[in-house]
Length: 60
Image 1 (cartoon, one colour):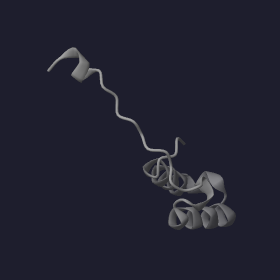
Image 2 (image 1 turned 180 degrees about the vertical axis):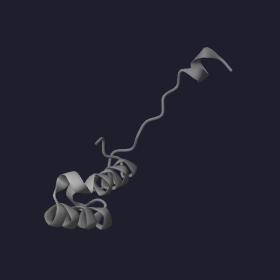
Image 3 (image 1 turned 45 degrees about the vertical axis):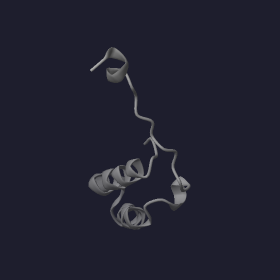
Image 4 (image 1 turned 135 degrees about the vertical axis):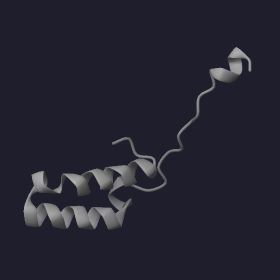
């Protein structure tokens, strides 16, 4: 393998959706939890939503 081959970078595709429209399933559950329990008790759901957004191409 040459030096040129080892220094290649992979480009991340730009998100295909607006952030507000991405991951509606995790967003709904996260928002309901925050309203009912407060943000501090919903950290796991918040993180799951962030993971989903990252998979959609967002940098969060």
